[in-house]
Length: 344
Image (cartoon, rainbow, N blue to C red):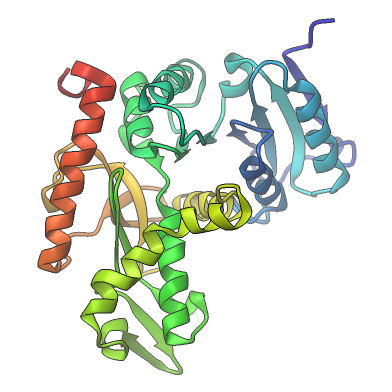
């Protein structure tokens, strides 16, 4: 018997409760994966879009996954989340993308060639163009995220390219964790680390600071060790995913799902004054990165959900060199994957 490609499940506890705020429709692709579980939980709980924001969750995965999706939906309903009004599970794009306000576009396939991701994200971009709201906020997560976000932008020409981004928050969070451990402080006390980069990430703590009692202290004032900042620190951050994989024989899912939620939360809610976060966004030419290339920058985000690349940051000469090298590598991979798309 063939499976029904789309099913809708209402939360029976909430059917008769009119929402105080307009419902948000949020899509999570690869909905049966562990990363999607983390994201779905956080969305339903309210930690992403707000504890007063009711949501309708859309879960999309490949054909043949409806039984697994149904099990996930049953668990979500059994959690009795007050904000989760409905769950739509589907294996078809039109149902998944129709009228969505936000999207987590997941892709984890490190062994696959970049061209496979290009095919998928052309499809996703076309679906965004055809079915989603034009105000959509979509974050591309996983393997080759900068290239796949670029493909999405080119495949959804009527959607502002500022509304599609790539996830680099995992590396940003990993950098925060390493600096916090070095300083023996809580991670939330550390602010303004940066992850630059396209396909190659460049962690940078030279502009970071931390709160100590009533004082704000530059990280470099507390740790006066260039070898640490230029060698040990970036090496640990950039190898963290492999370290996790070697330990548990799986790539990070919990930490990456949490990072995607952090990314969307800050995009939706804004960043506090004086702080920035790392996001993969379409370059405006800042720091020598060619316009339009999706690259990780420090950004500030206003209450209007618009991000702005932080300008005027003083870079170490080594960091400047690494940025230019990573730009060349990213553009080379974009050219190989897309052919003439980059200059079309």
